[in-house]
Length: 241
Image (cartoon, rainbow, N blue to C red; front, side, top):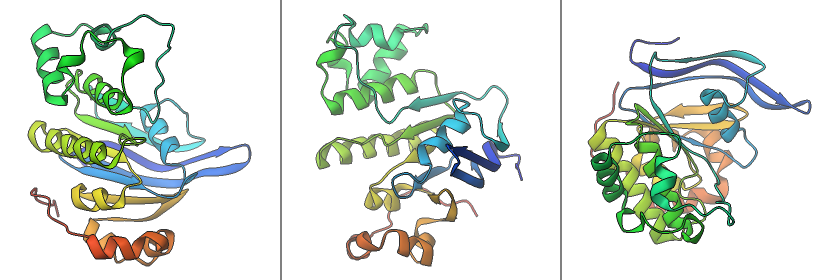
């Protein structure tokens, strides 16, 4: 199923944990320029799917393919700095990698943490920490950004700012994005494709198509009235047919 524009593809990926199905024959591909958001209830296997794609977890069956020499930037769902580790933001960004000084500062300016480079890692707020993780992910000049709940634990304003930053990076730098999110309003506005996961792929397609899907409506019944009232699909990039 892998096409010549694919950066990453999964084919019939299945995974069990303690005899419970986590992923059931999941197949999809992420192409150049795409912004795919994975949505689904808690415990649906979203983070597990990302970890299988990254090679952090081995699937029980199925195949994962990645383009040769692909560069992937990844931000995990949670990251708690060791309060006893005396490390500053700049040292953390340089950890286990050699980064050109000018590029590091330019990237820190882009993500808005340039004023925090000498701050202790343990003193960062939730929003600052999320921006730091995004900065580190960008320092490898990724072909693909994989983001696991990047706006988790942020207030509404912080969420809006972070999603706007991710969208700008997608449009300006050309990185494909694969993101897990619970924020349906932002998902619908910014994704080129939405993948609805509940152990298997319930539905996948462009946001305006997914919002009409019966299984999507069933899974997100409690949020649908809100979503339909405020939904406005107005991202300014083109869809690939």
